[in-house]
Image (cartoon, rainbow, N blue to C red; front, top):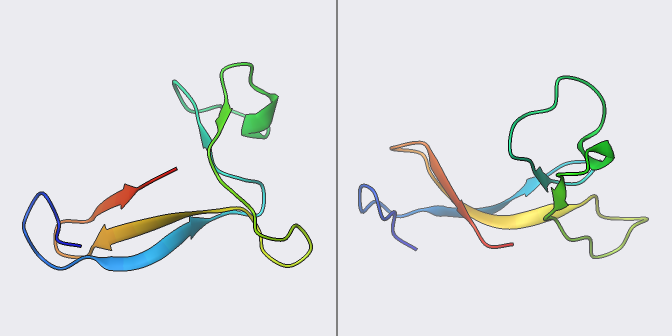
Amino acid sequence: MNCPFCGAEMESGALQSNYGIYWLPKPRKAGPPDLSRDAEHLSKQDSPLITPPYIPAFRCTKCRKIILDY
């Protein structure tokens, strides 16, 4: 995939976290994001015992942008 900002080739990978990846209207000051009523869980998990939650993504190391599908 080419970067829509600069046109360079993007690197395929994943954003990953042990606790999942959430969308929040604004960052939480304390506590896990899943405790917020406004938190939307975006990540997926292939196997809870083997793979922590992740989102497939592409990154551009030139302009430091990440594009993901959730």
